[in-house]
Amino acid sequence: MNRLKGKVAVITGAGSGIGRISAQTFAREGAQVVVTDLYAASAEEVARSINEAGGSALALKVDVGVEADLKHMIDSTIDHFGRIDVLFNNAVSKNPATARDVDFIDFNEALFHTNMRVNVLGGVLACKWALPHMLAQGSGSIIFTSSTSSIAGEVAQFSYGASKAAVNWYTQTIAATFGKRGVRCNAILPGVIRTPALEGWANEAMTQAFLDIQNVPRLGEPEDIAAMALFLASDESAYVNGALMRVDGGMSCATPMVPVVRAWL
Ligand SMILES: NC(=O)c1ccc[n+]([C@@H]2O[C@H](COP(=O)([O-])OP(=O)(O)OC[C@H]3O[C@@H](n4cnc5c(N)ncnc54)[C@H](O)[C@@H]3O)[C@@H](O)[C@H]2O)c1
Image (cartoon, rainbow, N blue to C red; front, side):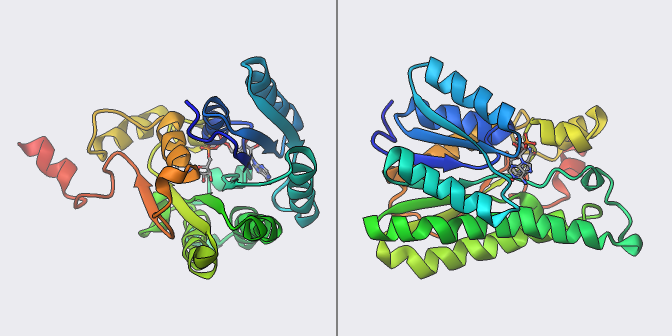
């Protein structure tokens, strides 16, 4: 309790999955939370759950692909709560084409631009509007949700991983640019997390197969990512800046041969 007492946190894509659980977790730890999502109804539902539990939340409809929405998000946060301590850039493009982006030869250029616009620029421009307030305070924690897809090659989703690799670069660049002035920036690289986004592209057989490549007994839950986000949002992580935190059940800690060898043991 109270690990975020006195802090104001803004979360994008907070109407579902990782963002939703993070908003509720931050609020339980004493933060005032601005719950934003492309879908007003889901943002309002999450904010209501927080307020009914005795917390303090404001819901906003924000399309992170639209800079005017991002400016409005930060302005509203300052108007309503007077400050911004945590910016959690978590929204991800939800284009139906994302689920079947499997033919590199038929490269989907429009999808590439959408992923870059929402997944990368959405967070970068949110930082642009939040940073002046954080720098004036001399403190702030920015968090991006990246992905393990950012750290190696893929055989599908030819823009998603690229967008997350760009997220990693901006995370480290923002960390280096503003760290001396008290603003930290870190990224979380989730593995396979049971959220609506995962259910949107992986069938049950794939999901079970993903378990085989993890080096823990279970798949990830949104709470696993929210726990890392809470740490990065709090002052407990004051010495952590520019880190790319893998929260992936050990998926990326071993050679790809491990599941094969384990089956042979
Ligand atoms: N679930 C996983 O296995 C997994 C793995 C690696 C990374 N991630 C990352 O975690 C983050 C959260 O994903 P999730 O699994 O919770 O997904 P989710 O689909 O449950 O939630 C994503 C939210 O983003 C919102 N959104 C979509 N487009 C938006 C826009 N333009 N503006 C604002 N909000 C928008 C959606 O409405 C939704 O509420 C994403 O950045 C995703 O890339 C997830």
